[in-house]
Amino acid sequence: MTSTSPEPVLFISYSQTSEAYKEKVLEFANRLIDAGVDVLLDQYELDLGSNLNAYMERSITDPRVTHVLALCDEAYKEKSEGRRGGVGTETTIISTKVYEQLSGPKREGARGPRFIAVRFAPGDVLPAMFASSLYVDLSDPGSAQYGEQYETLLRALHNRPARIKPALGQIPAFLNEATAVPASPSAAHATAVLEAVRGERWPSARSRLGDYLNALEAELRALPMAVAEEGEHQGTYLQDVVRSALSAFLPARNAFAGVVHALGPAPIDTGLVDALVAFFERVRNVAWDASRASKFNEAAQDYKTFLVTELLLYASGSLYKAGAYAVLSDLLGRSFYVVRPSTGGHEYVTFADLTSFPRNTAEMVLSEGTRWISPIGYLLISRAAPSVLSQQELCQTEAMLWWRAHSMGSRWFPLTMYAWGSGTHLPAFGRAESKRWAGYLATVLGYASVELMKADVPKIARAFDEDRKPMMDVSVDVLALDRIGRRP
Image 1 (cartoon, rainbow, N blue to C red):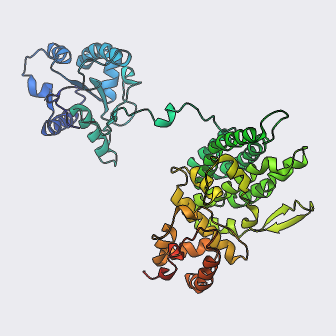
Image 2: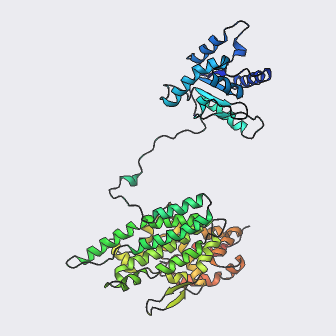
Image 3: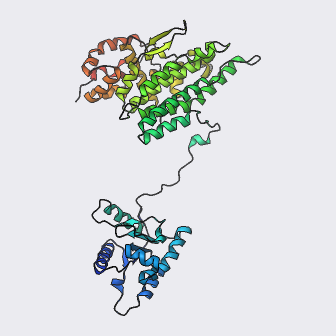
């Protein structure tokens, strides 16, 4: 920003504490003049016999004077508060003006506050009239902050602020939408976790994480049953219920991704993986749990199973996005102790066995009469939020989960891959041409080294071809298998 204001004219108010102090003030004034500030100082202006009080009063009230600088030391404070000497005369005038400055509106055409206090000596040297004013600290020329403080003063005098308020923008388009999205019931708990992370209060973040995931689980379970009551048009009713519930859960899903993204790179173990494992163990059978507790069958809650799978996808994608590769690998490598719906007994399963993509949920939500290549994939893609996890990042995450599941003897069908197509590499795999990025990918995929990952490439390529149909004929080239670790 370039100001068109005239050069600043500055009057310096100070106490003639000693000859050495007067010399210090003179050197300071000379430096300001050299920096383009026109300074009025008694040492420049007055001769023997001049009326000092008249000069001070005239200078303070002169409309040409853009700023009055009060150089404060112990003597200045003592004289101004006791109204003694020349300083006492000056501050009698200044104090009234300072209080007007603090309480009144900004002067028309003003550069900023006209009266500026400068702490020009160590200690408690600011008079009461400047007690609530921002001031410049030039008390120690040898300190690291002196240069910054001097620059702050020059910027104020020349009206060249370091930070410029941006022009007012447009109202975001989403605020003009007819339907407002209500805040998630678990949002306050998510905010509490994020505040603890920002303050690096890790024990607090760990305890708040448990509360947050409990609240998120309760929110998921509280979503309505997709069951038509007697006399209603069942198809339309179910469709409306599921669409509304999926839309209502979006803020909760996005907040969940934000919490995982924030905690993933934490410098200490925050218990994130343990907490996520326990959470997914509890919610894996959320649809079955609800059907046991009511007269309705599991199909009425199928969309909640879709949401659980979506949460796992977003947790994985957010950890990768945050660079928490070892944390993501730990999560994907865990065994989950869950209830077997068919018998009510317990079993250990992999992350891939947690998932379920009920086709009827997608078909219920998507427009009737349209043939979808992958109804579930399209639903996932259509719900992607670029600021949280983009469509590209979603495809990439599914590709990594597919590989990791296959290497564990399990299966994951990446149904969003149709949206990526062929011809370009998925970024996580394309970057793996670099040995450093190949190392990150190997960690995520559960390999102890890049060489072990490369040794598995032929098997992975064959598996990709076998799974090509559910992947919508996407070429294996998207994984850039022949390029892994070729570059330093």
